[in-house]
Length: 162
Image (cartoon, rainbow, N blue to C red; front, side, top):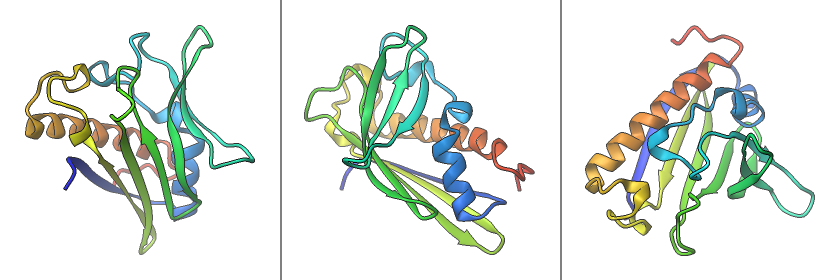
């Protein structure tokens, strides 16, 4: 079984609205974390870039205009599911993690669940893991995803936080 993080929350919007905010407004709600930077350049703006050939990619655009591809989109199912590869600039070719986001209607709300898996491909000694043992690294990473989802929730039309 791969090392993974699993977090979720509910937002008071439909699954389609939740998907749209997640994908279209990621540049507004994403909170960079100095511990988990994609590139040594620091903080950029995230966005999903779609194209006609395949599902597209998740990118980070730096203030100087340079673009880093975080990963390819592997599933784009509006209102249901989004999946994409996730890598940092320091990852080797065989070091790739994967994020799967699900949008599930629960009454008048939507449960948004993020599973970030594949961390067993990145050794504990790797700079991206800061030499943290697996359990501590995954806990810190889960805390970051929780903070990201809390920020995401503030972008939904009804951001009461319930």
